[in-house]
Length: 143
Ligand SMILES: [Zn+2]
Image (cartoon, rainbow, N blue to C red):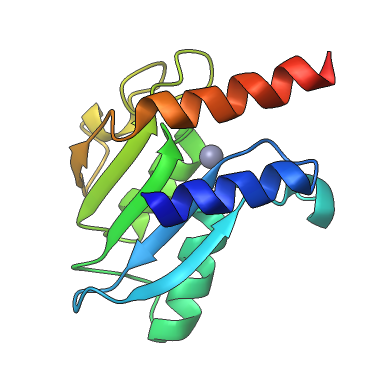
């Protein structure tokens, strides 16, 4: 999670909403790490999770990432939760809850739908205070 938080801080420095993600392969290696890049890439889908899933799939030469673990500083939104499921990621660790945009414990609760064919094991609240502080600091400065 420390590396995901570092990616979130780097995203803030680029003027992006500070969310960072890291993907770990089944042998425990970091296969991808990135932060939000929606502004830089002019791409509303360039969330941290999507960035690392794309990079990891390219590295793995596969559209699926079984046995992989995704660490992300904020509760994934519905789009990212759907991508996590489609990628067959085994473990999801996230930091702060996101009652406004989250799609795991809030809102769409993507993994709880009967139409969701793959549900990762989910561990929430990891370093949540630091993740939330980064977001609050970022939005306070923009007001
Ligand atoms: Zn997302």
